[in-house]
Image 1 (cartoon, rainbow, N blue to C red):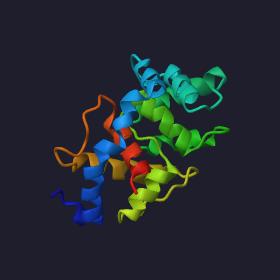
Image 2: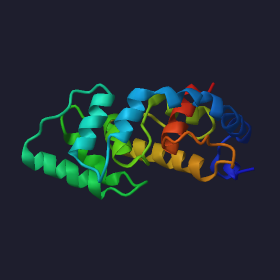
Image 3: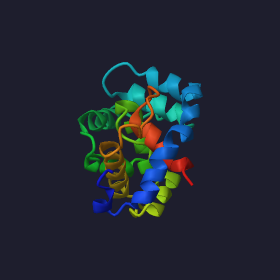
Image 4: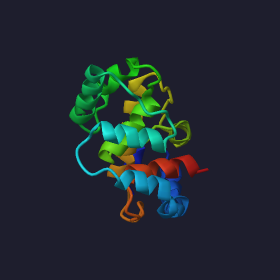
Length: 178
């Protein structure tokens, strides 16, 4: 078994999660809105990725002055997974929180998971306290590290091969796991 007990994760719940995961995410291949948005992105992180992410997530897309647009784009291009610390200053923009930034990062890289309260709650129930605090980038960073741990130590049959990002599969699975 994966060394989850070293990280405080409840081994039985983790095994149950991986056993249930394929069924929890089986319908994702039919999520045409998500797949269309994800696969419409063709190259390096850009403001176009942010626009696609915002439309998919039903946020009103931004129209920023050029200097802010350049800063946001530079930040998105510079961040290296799984470190989210450089994203903190984006939270100073109006109507931007860690949940929205996670959406931008997910669509820009496919590596960063979408930050959701339900996924955080499941991780907490599984024995690794993971707060959901959209105003604190450190909370999102902790969540990213938890998802990375689940990806890194997943059993061979634990992650379904659906063709969508593993971070998305884990995030959705966590949201749906009872």
